[in-house]
Length: 132
Image 1: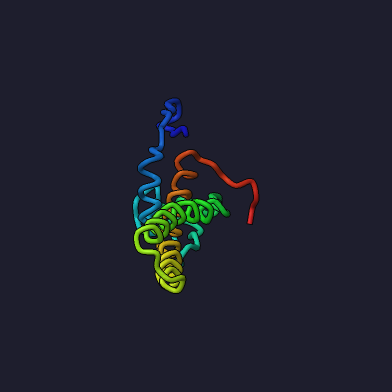
Image 2 (image 1 turned 60 degrees about the horizontal axis):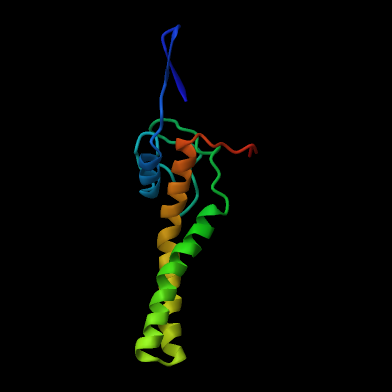
């Protein structure tokens, strides 16, 4: 990204991917850090109300859902296997434990991961070709 300073000075600036992902995971604008990234649970705002960054050109699509499934699966399945080996509970115990835990973890991680993906797209200036 290039920023213009005056008529003849152009300075190449870098966006920190780690910082942008952290801000996005906290549901904040990756540019200014204000909490304006989402208008609803996982609905990205059209733009930041504080600094004007256009979020409509950064589309996360299915990526956050895949990353969420991957992460939740790597948390729940080892715990499930450990419990089965340690106690051999009835199937209803597994259902009572793992179904709610899977749903809750998925609901908790999805907005964090979507924000991080949008922040990463902003940091690397990856824009969608489609116009809504």
